[in-house]
Length: 50
Image (cartoon, rainbow, N blue to C red; front, side):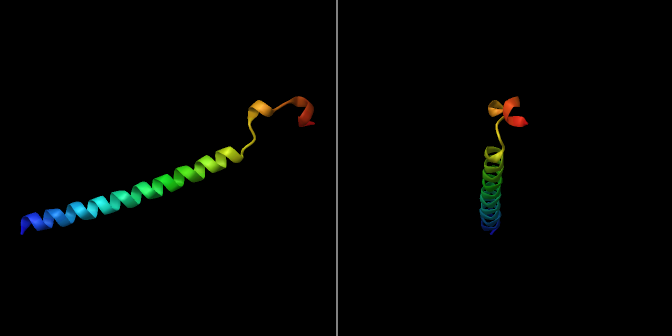
């Protein structure tokens, strides 16, 4: 009986870990998209600034 309980706890922990990793991946994708939208400082010139 104790082995079954441990198995249930491990399965639940694995499921929650998988959900957390998906959420983290989604957050990283959003951050990457937002950073790619920002203008690069390499393209900056004073002639285009004014």
